[in-house]
Length: 112
Image (cartoon, rainbow, N blue to C red; front, top):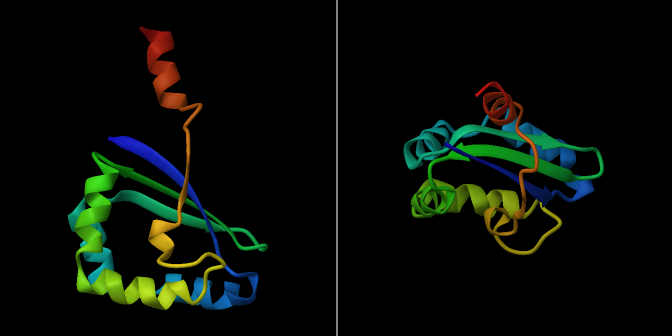
């Protein structure tokens, strides 16, 4: 399973709305993400709007394409787009970060 970390930018004026929406994500969307191949997906939000996301997937491009093809994701992205500082669909504006350290991988290498 591959690990992915990404950044997004929520408009600081919309932090409360963003937090509220993510406290009760639509069950249909939760199932669509799971069924598309998203695992251990989490989001972390800083008070200036910096959003850090983490997800594991065998193939995130394929998982993103599967969830993007759903009506529930189109509706969710339209709702969330109003809350972001970036233009367009938030799930298409992510900035991916390279992984430079993973504890378990290095422990496994050190112990072999």
